[in-house]
Length: 113
Length: 114
Image (tube, rainbow over all chains, first blue to last red; front, side):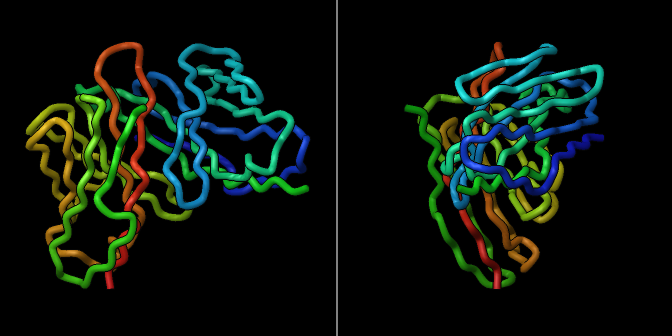
């Protein structure tokens, strides 16, 4: 089966750096996504990793280690608007469609002044 | 701009009622998905469709059915709503083909079943 774990909540200070971890156990791994979701809104895409290593996109970076079943999202120079839930999702091959995602429970990040 | 819309943002229904949640996308995507989102449980896949009239069960299909008569529209049906179906329902779509693309989500429908 699929199992994705991430911390429930984290708190960080404005201007700081925070790392949100995600571990997974899935069959037929085919990529890992990070989404941001503000309260009451739809998730929005942040990053995608399919090969090992770091993907950088502005203040946000995402890392993947397939052998360890591990990813993290790194947020630099935190801003108050970064307060949101961050969802880790793994793309697997549970069907012929090949586009199914399994989501973790999400990490609620609170940025304080 | 990519657009996924859902028929209602908030819905209140009574136990036993038949409920229709509608999702429309204007991007000509082949794949469409219905999730529910509950605190601590994240997003869980109910059903998805990879083409018109084609559907597959997700992780929690019990108590739900779906309809995909046109490419742009994917409907989620609760045949007889129950209180444990009170949740946030999110629709998403994605095109087929490679490289894999992220799913685009609608704004969500918060359903309360009394």
